[in-house]
Image (tube, rainbow, N blue to C red):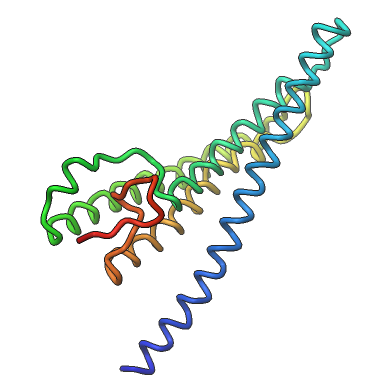
Length: 184
């Protein structure tokens, strides 16, 4: 039993190191996409209003970077527990009831993420024949943000549920301004 427990701890340590690298990569990509979006919008404004000769691709590129930034940011939001929650009710519940409520919340979130993955994949497959008019990019690459975000959110949610039921600590149902919430 102790060997099995040590094996689980070893696997979880590896998963946690992957989580840290993945979170860093997502945050870095989000920052890079925001910088690109600001640059593209600035170029679009400059060419449209100063040069009076707009570049046709700026609106499309800004829109696509916004989509990717939003979906990757949603995954980071699950990791940090920064999505909206109703803490007033949750904090008044006893610990055992709170665990059940948080489990229900996690189940609802998992259902939503499953729908993102499933419907986003279908949308991506259907959009594979479409090409964006200005950038001439397959639209499936743009729609890839939806199922990818769902998978990333599900990964983070599973880790949060494991934390919740093994240590009692989780960002689920906690104050998003705090580092970690304790479920007492």
